[in-house]
Amino acid sequence: MIRAEDVFRTFQEHRGEAIVIPTGTSGRHWMDFTTNEKRDLNLGGAMGQTTSAALGLALSLPQEKVVLFDSEGALLMNMGILATIAGKKPKNFFHFLLDNECYATTGGQPVPNAEEINYAGVAKEAGYAAAYSFTDLEEFATSVDQIMKETGPVFVAIKVVPEVENEPIGRRQRRPSRSRAETIRDLHSELGITVA
Amino acid sequence: MVEQQRAILSPETLIEEFNKNGVTHVVTIPDSETNYLYELMKEQPSLEIVPASREGETFAIALGLIIGGKKPVCLIQNTGMLESGDSIRGMALDSGFPLVMVVGYRGWNRHGVITDSVARYTEPFLNAMRVNYYLVEQDADASRISLAFEEASKTKRPVAILVGDEYHGFNRV
Image (cartoon, rainbow over all chains, first blue to last red; front, side, top):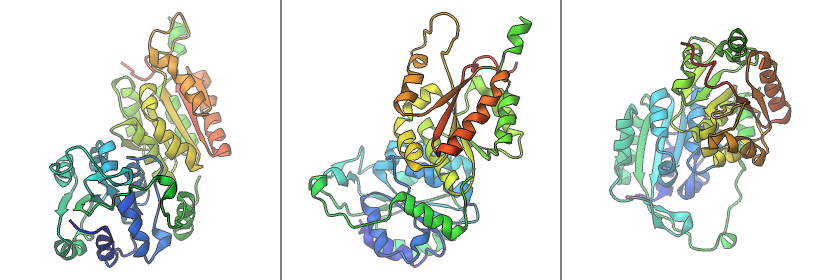
């Protein structure tokens, strides 16, 4: 297993100008490594549907690379999206999955079939152009540059160390982060987009 | 019989309204009842179809498209709309963007008793979500489709069009 912060530290060097959408408990580490916040997007709002929103964004901006850092708990809630994505074949879509094998934010209960399911295998058979699995940081580090040059949709499953939260929600320390609306406004300003 | 034929909502009318209102994408679950509409949409150079696997996806895909500057509609059946509750809340209502959802009103009948339970729950569901809606049953109602687009744009909220002619007009034989 790899620490989520090491995934992001490694990925950042290969981000280029990509729009990055982090999700889940692991995803919050992205804010420590991003160097282009105006191209970071918060698309949370309904668990299991951030993946769908990321697809919509990729379809609407085919000239931009769109990178989603998904979580396995969310993906399991809407696994059909893999077929939806594969069907539309967005060449600019890079779907990373940070798989900690549990619902970390609710105390670490395992997700269904946590240790045996092969998400990259599911994505590949659903029709993704390419799919990879990583459990070792060095292997990921030597592969990510080439992966980001591939034609999408590409799926990258990464086993990450769970960061289980057991504190009641009201007592948890939350670092300030931009709201979804703020990140959308910033992206619109960055790309010169106006909504009809 | 002649009167009955005239009273349908033709797929061409929906397409015309989509084009008039600048729709770029139709995010949808195709079904056999709306096959002719689907075929007609595929022929439109101005429309891109995004087939979804489950109705809840359509609202999130639409949000992504809107953020990227496109103008999608969600085209689903009322059964799937019920499944989409959390997505409508989190991805449409809470987003503050206009969105028109075209919903096949399965089970709707102006005459006699409604026997399909999904028709009984459709309008209460929309009322509970505070989503306004327009019933469209025939071509003469077409202007209500544009009204829905105008309302969505003005209020920056989702607005529904309930297609009450689902089983007659869309599947041209």
